Length: 347
Image (cartoon, rainbow, N blue to C red; front, side, top):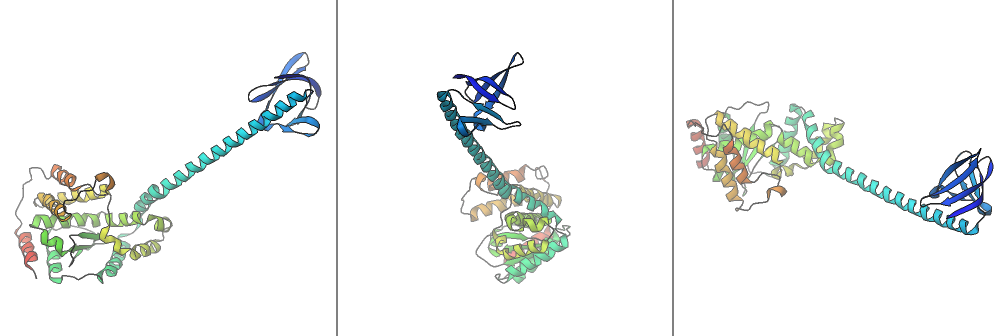
């Protein structure tokens, strides 16, 4: 649609030809023997008084149309384009908002736990030991400790001759659950039901080596920090370990069911198996330990993709595939065997 004889003003007045295009208004202005084209975008055109149309800028531009029908059509296009732009802007804002929410969720659920786990390395060993002792004291009131087996299992562990900055202390407790867990700073708790199912000293050595690696490599501390990351992230970031420690102590019961990542669980298996191999203890102790755990679980299996632990079948295969466990030369350890027999017959 075109209109001629339109008055155009941008500091100087002139008669112009105006054309309505899809997204813009094209103004053709004859000046100094040449035809100059000026573009107005509909969403920026403003309707003024007396049927005039204005366009922002300096100097402000102005149109006075001679055709009423052209003025009506221009007004319609301005309204349509303005509505379309607003809708687009609203849609763009919503998309940006959704992206920001998604980024925030990813940061909260993925980045924060990972950062918190990494920040655990800033905790000193001495502070970790103090924290672990407080956590153990918080749990101890709910334990019925088997003092005799506790003394024997610590003697058994010392016979493994491991080196560590932590003073490893193992406690045997009574309970109808086949479980063992590591506390940051050097404490390990073993339930007597699990001990009852273990049939040889390599199996017990595998269990203690596995839990020892969780302590030695700070798996328990890192996993706890990840689990409660949303509550302790800022405290850790600012170096306020007392606040972070208070959160962990308040949630000490979570240690009994602490879930390690697949990576950490595999690391504990592999490093634990290497400790056994270096001492001539049969790596198949791990395999038999896993078979016992599988039996205690009732044979139920959880698909690995929704379980933090590698499944037991994969753990068995993985240990047996380690170079230090293949064609292994084992050496009978009479001291460990004797202590194991005492543990099994202790009352």
